Amino acid sequence: MKDRQGIVMVYTGNGKGKTTSALGLALRASGHDEKIFMVQFRKSDPTYGEIQAIRKFLPNMTVLQSARSRFRKRGDFEEADYADAQNVFNKGKEALLSGEYDLVIFDEINFALYNDLLQLDDVLNMLKERPRHVNVVLTGRYACDEIIAAADLVSEVKEIKHHYQAGVKAQPGVEY
Image (cartoon, rainbow, N blue to C red; front, top):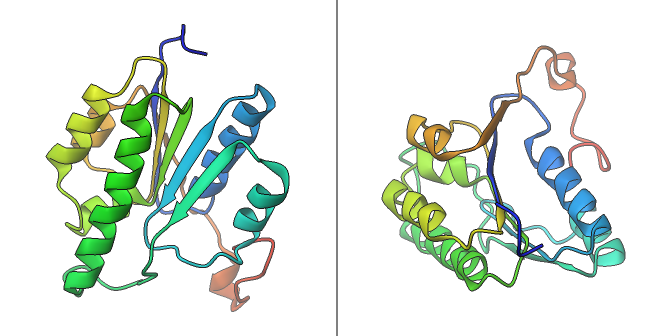
């Protein structure tokens, strides 16, 4: 698909479904034999259902997960968290700028930016430098105004009601 104009898509908000939306797009791209690369910030569990499904059914998709899965509060990160986020970003950036992939997903990058684990200018420059044909997805809560301005499509996923509020715990196949 090297003859198309790639777009930057942002899935943000406090609702459930941002990563799921990105994976739905990956499934659609896979149906067109596109090559996909996804990096996941703050997710390091290879037993997540989506990772298992990708391995089974999407041979044209590569996933790199964070080495650290920390759900910390803003300002409560360790040096290793910053180094890990930078490493994950660098690998995703390398894949994006190579032009080898048709779709590159940065899952939870907005969270990483919000928590100052990454530099906003690095992300914005990467988006400007990307090969013309590559579609990019940025997910996570707290998308900042600059990311929204740089995007071609922004969807806000809004929580209206969530089963957690009724005390229902996370379930395999639903949350992971």
